[in-house]
Structure formats: structure tokens, C-alpha cells
Amino acid sequence: MSDLLWDDVKCLFDPDINGTLPDVVVEGTTAEDWQALLDLVQSQGWQYAYSLSGEPMELASAADMLAAASADTTPVLRVWPIPEVLMIFRVYQAESIDFDVDLRELQGQERLDVLVAVLRLIGQRLGKSVLMSPQGSSGRPDLGFDVEAGRVVLMVEPTDPGPVIAEPTD
Image (cartoon, rainbow, N blue to C red; front, side):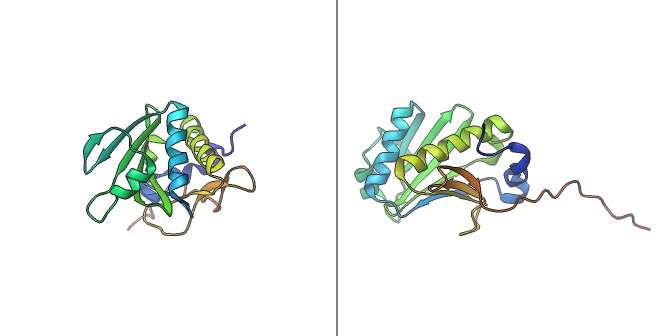
């Protein structure tokens, strides 16, 4: 059974409400956690592409990626757990793993299950929470991998705005 059911969370995946690119973060990380993430990507056989300043490169070690990160340069790791779902990891600092997903690619139970599986794998590998918040809303996660529960859980009560009914005008 899925950690989350599409009908229960679909309003959280509405790009018009929550923005197209929600923020996903793992806080309190280290260079070793970044390396564990890179190892996970490779061990899962996920497709990936690494670039530095927009230039495609061979995948570097986490230490090299973090050393390359600066005000002018952000190493970027694009990961496709399945061909239709892209996750973009941006290497800003060792202390957090930040990435985006595109809500337009995450519609329906099958795609939700892909996201949940990736969040769970990352959280289990690192032993840390993986939190997803609406685009640009710092610190208010909608859902995430809960280390204690060992699964992805809702962190807000989703509200379905339902159809908008216009008031009649005279």
C-alpha cells in the first residue's frame, strides 16, 4: 500500500496553488550525506546528468561538488528516477541537500508513488527527514519522510478548494 493516496493529497500537487517547483530539503547534512546521496543515485540505476556552470561533466565526488560551489557557481545534478520525472539537486552547501521536483510531472497515484519512493529512499539512506514545501514558502512543509515513522507522511491537512462557483452579477 502507498504511503499517501492521490485523492488525499492531489490539492497539494496543484501547480496553480503551490507553485510549479516545490522546495525539497534535507537539513543538517554533511559532505558524507551528499556522497551517500550520489551513491544512492548510482546504486538505484537512475539516469543522471551533472553540470557545472551549465557545462556537462562527469559526475564528481561530493567533496569536489561542494568545493566547486560558490557565489558564482552552483553544481547541478539532474536525476530521473523514471524517464518522466526529473529531480534537480543544486549544491549550495554541505549543510543541506536542496532539490526541486516539477508538480506537472507528478500527477496521479503512479507518479506520487515514484516521489514517495525517492523521498523514502533518501530519508532512509541518510537517516534524516526529507521535507517538501510549496515553492518559496520557507519552513512550512506539506509532506515529507518522517524518520520515526519510517515513511512519507502528510504534515498539513490538505484542503481541496473544489470548483470555484462565480456569484451571479446583475
